[in-house]
Length: 187
Image (tube, rainbow, N blue to C red; front, side, top):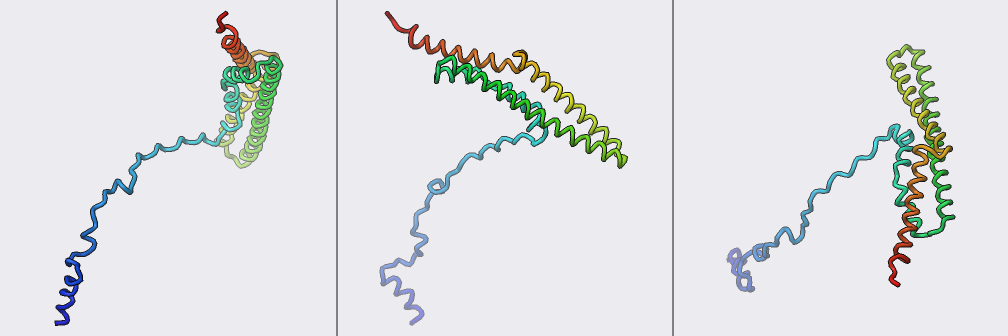
């Protein structure tokens, strides 16, 4: 009787004999788990090759939008001395970028020359030819950089284009200030 009294005792305590897990209501999955759309893959980084210090760096500098920078600068400080100072700063930035690129190519050509000499001693003709082509490309790029530098010194060419663009933006900013504060007033 002791064996069967265990089952009877549960019913006498007020339990109906069902397990507690059966009494728990079903909770929907959406309540606790947030289903998100898979994120897009992050954009790939630029390869760490010649584009980090070569002529591409200079062209990135030259391709920036200096007109909007000039416009915003005019809205902040509409003084022509501010314009002159920023033009000088842009010229200095261009000169600094040119020096970086020239230094990059000078170092690169120096390394190539070392590899050409050492690989030619070991008879690696194909490698020497590939290195010679790389050297010719680097020399061509450095000639282009020197041409841009010379043109910038004479206020011509692509180097001077950033100055023209900045000045145009600055003047447009001055015109916007005048248009907003003076020309739109009714007498």
